[in-house]
Amino acid sequence: MKVQMKVSPKIIIDINADEMTTVFEEIANAQEILGICECGKCKSQNIRYVVREDSEANKYYEMRCQDCFAKIAFGLNKKGGGMFPKLKENTDEDKCLMGGAVQPGAYLPDKGWLKWDKEKNCNV
Image (cartoon, rainbow, N blue to C red; front, side, top):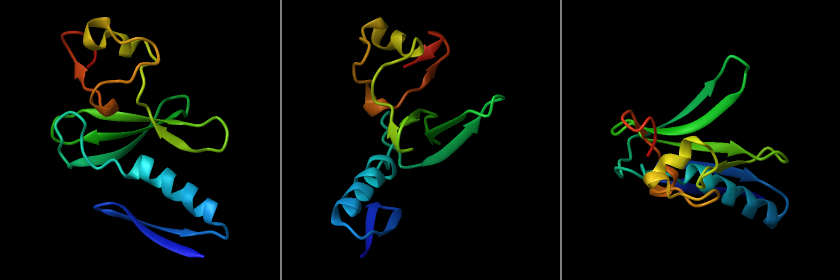
C-alpha cells in the first residue's frame, strides 16, 4: 500500500509498506522528527535542518532557529538506526540549566530547545 501524509505545514511524506503496522511506525517516526515546526524558545517557524561532522567523522543532527539561534539536538538509536529529539538532560553541559536544578534524566525546558549563554558558559 502507498500512503501520503502531511507531517508538518511544509513536509509531506510518502510511505510504501505491506503492513499497516509499518505504515503506523513510519508515520510516528516522521512526526517525531519532522513534525517539529517551531522553535521552543521564541516560537519562530524559521528553522533549518543542520548536520555537522567533527574531525573524527561523528555526525551531529540538529534543528536551528534562524531568529533566536536556539537549537534542538537529535540522537540516533543504537539499534535500528532511528532518530529521536533529545528532550532530557544527560550531559554536563545541560547541568547548568535552571541554576543546576535539572536532575539527570529530567525533561529539558522549552521542549528541548537550547541556546548558548555566554555569561553562564552553558546552554539554557
